[in-house]
Image (cartoon, rainbow over all chains, first blue to last red; front, side):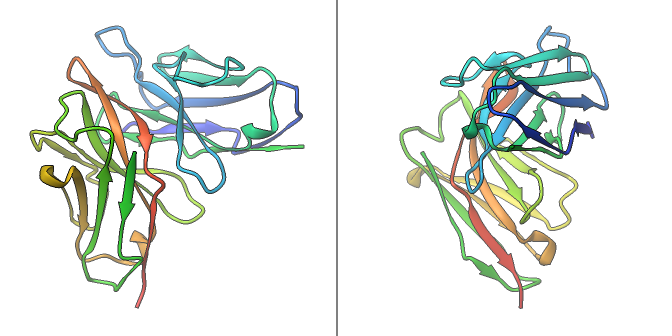
Length: 112
Length: 121
């Protein structure tokens, strides 16, 4: 199974300041078709997860451009350029390169 | 939209059955898989399995309780069954639509609100 390790486990962010979350994969998520099957989700309190980014750096419909994704191979980062109060929740990375599909353990973001 | 409905409480060793009604989309679409994901209270997300309209199904082999995912096309529903459940199967169960492209399974783009199922005597 592909293991996804997220760091930090939690972070306290200041509104208007940047924040970043790391996701490291136990193996490369780059497929021979040139695509990288790594996604980011945000789960707000009491809500289902919502898709933020797909294929590392592509924002899903309606996702604010303060969110960006980067990385390649096994190391990935989700960045929030200016944290806003509604960004509170748990962020998960997920891979679909290989079955079983797996999620990272999550990073809890709170606002200072 | 996706809406789960489940029993709320299941006894240990019994069968957990949950259904997910899909509206605004057809489960017979060749553009999507339909998946189940669960989340134990206070913990992270675990993929259970995904099914295609032709009933091609993939399961997570790490689940200890036997799993079956099926479709009911006439009702535009998918369902999940876990047999011989234990307390470890207590979780919020989500159904979600999963995009595919070029035969590759991609991301879950739309999720139901989830159904909490507690396994307890």
